[in-house]
Length: 200
Image (cartoon, rainbow, N blue to C red; front, side, top):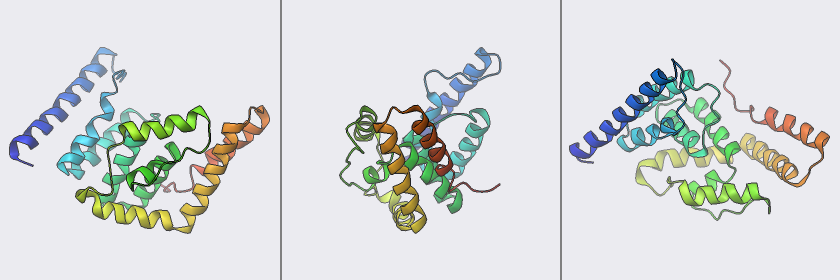
């Protein structure tokens, strides 16, 4: 990357942050960000390989958008930054959140064939999202170390069991309209989503 290219990317970050600050002022001290500008910043830090800057941004994001569900891509970017900052346990937690957000995300990253869980609209939508918008690949040289780590994480028994259980629950949710069963499945799903949570 040339100095000019780096300068342009840093200017983009500055412009986005200024827009978010203006948004907060407009809404009386609260962020609204209907345009989703907050999601565009991590990818710019990753382009720069400025993981310290990205980490500071995610800290700010957590404080200002604590209830944000986040997109799959955003969670995956967060995972990468945590890994490159040496926070492997936190990276595992965020990798699991990425998987729970879209169970095909690791397949997409590693260039595997993506097969929807079933014929439901939700499963097809999630697969199409990755095909159309997810831009990261294990073949990109800058992510070689991260790809090795993520591959090892996928092979752990903890991840294998948790992912199998999660997929089984999601398939049941996609195939039933029974209220009591869905309530039970959502409780199981919510509990499963916290299995990699780092204790504070």
